[in-house]
Amino acid sequence: MHHTHYDIIIVGQGISGTVLSNALMEQYQKVLVIDDGNKKAASKIASGVINPVTGRRIVKTWQIDAVMPAAVRIYKALENKLNTSIIRQCNIVNFHASEQMQKAFATRLAEDPTFLSSPLLSDAITAAFDGPFGHSVIDPCWLVHLENVLATWRHYLIEKNALLEDVFDFKKLDVTADQIVYKNYTANQIIFCEGAKGQENPYFKQLPFAPNKGEALLVNIKDLDDGFIYKKAVSIVPWKDSIFWVGSNYEWDNYNDDPSLSFKEKTIAALNEWLTIPYEVIDHIAAIRPANIQRRPFVGMHPNYKNIGIFNGMGTKGCSLAPYFAEQLTSHILQQTTLDNEASIDRFNILAT
Image (cartoon, rainbow, N blue to C red; front, side):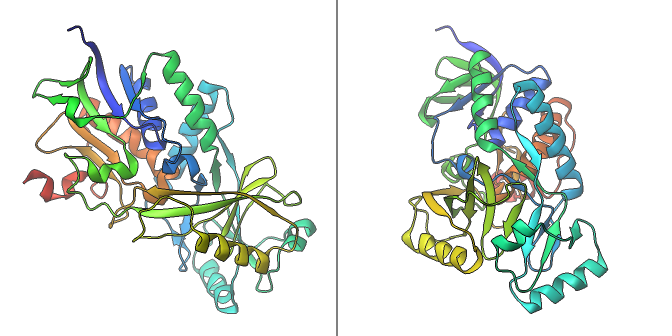
């Protein structure tokens, strides 16, 4: 049987598979991406926000000083390559939920003003929200148009004969020390970017996956400025036209990816308490995110199968983490450079047993 040979097969074309295949192709690797086009994949319904600070303590997110510049650079390069809009700066206006939170922000601003400010808002934005405890602004934040980048990259792969639209079947995978064989294709290596399906991967299921369910409402808010992201009990994120993504929750014990009535009711109640202008709920979406207990990515090659790798576990930070670590994994594969200790799967001894 004749086999078409590739340097690397990538399984999954969410945001991780997209930026990894791009990074490898930029280094002249012949890549085949296998993806089933799952419309409920987490990447397809994520908000696309790159936020440099996190939590009630308002501290910088892990590796953000390296991760964010890399993400902006890589997405802008993809914009030029694909001739489509992918990323724009879209700062977060954070409305304080209480006087305590207002004081906590003032304290943090005095300690470290990096990314933080409290500028005046336009009259239109001020009038759109009930914000008695004031606000802060996180600057810069970025917004990735995931629908655009995923769809246009898919078309690019098709044009390059680099996409197999198929449900990956492990029974058809043959792994030897010298090569990977999958159906009519051979490759030097295979990298799994399966998202939440990674917990079922026979080579990597021992990793501490902790998938969580995320939900959001798509809401038409005609009179709201789409130049910002707004955050209080929920986040209101520009989606497209006058439609905003509103969410999200984190359910760690419910792996059902169907939208829940409880989330919808809770989110509408939060909007009614906060938003002072008319809105209309037009859709309700949900997905399972590929998170893990440590909240650090899974990046690297299997200790026992040197030609099998994983690029997964980005959780809610996929848009920010994936571009940076895609370049790191590409260098690791091609030049044997070192992976970040906190991201490398070498930190898990259980895989070698």
